[in-house]
Amino acid sequence: MMYTVSVPVSIQTINEQSILDILKKLQQLNANEVYLIPLKVDHWDDTCKTIRTYLPFFTSHNIEVCVWIGGSLAHYIYPEAYDTIIDLEGGTSQRICPLDQRFEAYFCDLFQQIAATGVKKIALDDDYRMNWTTTPPACFCPKHLELYGAILEEPMTLESMREGIYSSDPGKYRDVWLEGSRDSLCQLATAIRRSVDEIDESINIVLTSGPADWGADGASGPDLATIFAGNNQKELRMSGAPFWGQRVGTAMDFARKQAAHCKKHGIKTLAEGDAYPRPRYAGPASGIENLDLIARADGNFDGILKYGLDYNSSPNYEPGYAQFTERNKELYRQTEAMFAGKQGRGIHLFEPLDANWHTRRVSRQPEFDAMWSPGVAFLNDNSIPAVFEPGGVNLVFGQHAWMLDPELLANGTILDYTAAMILAERGIDVGIVEELQGTDGNFTYVGAGSFEYYKDEQEIVALYGNVPIHNLVVNEQAVVLTEISVRNQSMTGAYRYENANKQRFLVFPFDARESKSVTGLFRSYCRQRQLISAHEWLCGSKLDAVCLGNPDLYLMVKKDEQSMAVGLWNFFPDRIQQPVIELADDYAEIEFINCTGTLSGRTVQLDTPLYAFEYCAFSVRK
Image (cartoon, rainbow, N blue to C red; front, side, top):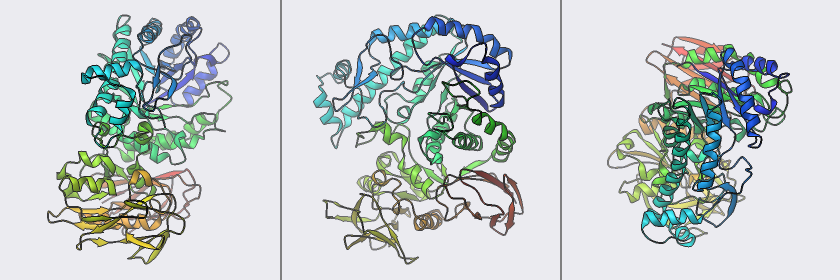
């Protein structure tokens, strides 16, 4: 399937004077499709008239048209007041509860009006979700409490749901919340699909998913995509965008995990190439371009939703996004060709997308915790490629350990404290004998003057952040790799352990979610070297390619029987003066993209620096 480019264009910017300039920008952006966005819901008759007027223009230039409704449960300001979402703490919001029948009728009518314009695709924005960034679990409005009570066949109050969900055994309360949330979102989705079918069953409906669709809401992105598509091709825009922060790789690995899942279920996928809030003064083009290149190298993405025009200004106000895309056309082609047909190599990130149904510790910020994976961060922070299919060393953090198939342990496993304790509770020997009382209960908080001592390197690394460290006594057969010193108290740091079943573990004494991206604990030169060395001990083989000592260097490695492709993205402000990549195997030939260099034995040395936010790649062949 050809990799496609879809570009959002605000309807309010389209007129007779701007349309040719918009076309020029779309052509520079290599657009196969345009997403026409009405930014407001007032003057809907005028919006539909504009769609009808310019639909033939775009299609006559071989650009398909999708109308992207810019809001559903949160983004739009509606003329009428509807029931709003209430969170588990009793907090109110302006977000609309999907159980409001008046809103369902209004929104379905809106879809029918768009369907009548003649478009063949309608997209829904990423506010079609229950949970929201840093807010507590939702929704617990009177209608939802009544729904939860009906499912459980007992009266439910906000207080009883809060007590049950936040308990150490959330069980039925967690399940009924997720089941009720799923049912309410799916019920509205079904009504929307039915309303469009009354006009034309061949019109596809696409969800531009939000983070909550991938591990916070009861309804998953694939659940909703199946309903919205009807008898058409299931399609989802993934969640994970450049505007999430400097480390594009962390957001992108969240999206890559989604795309790998969708590939197995026949769902067409688009990357989220958004430099919100735009233009380049607010969101640089480098983020979009690097995300696009990662998506093309990954191979599980069918295209990108590429935000190349500003939503408010004229099409000529911000030329930069289109210019960078035009400049990189050959780079796209080379990247796709170099990485095609190869399998990803690295550490297997074990993070099931339905983990929220199995957790025994419900997050108080479910969407935030879904979108900012500590496992992704840990690998990204140490420039180690993540893969999303089993077969190599596993990285298992936190509550995901409840879902881990013990057979995967034969490949070697990296654990944080929480995952290790869960596996121990499941009867798996991970080398922990007991946990000693710390200065703050069962753990000790890292503070100023704390450090970790790496025994083999005889190196001290300072630790920062208010992070709990658990004081563990480990089996005498364990090899303690580091010691952590907090307030002059020395504790076991990282250790490796092989049990009687020949299962090998690298264990850290901290909860990764609470310690995420902490300098020293997560992010350090020593930690990177420790992980690389431990990989060989855990599974008996080296990582296929490593590049040491460069903060926020993102690596992708893919192999087939005869060759290997390696992509390097520098997401750090400093340039990498002379990149050196160590390989695990011998190769005879090398080819470069966007750089030059030499292959000497198992070492690749690039001739020129890799500048901040730049990308290069090479492939080697036996």
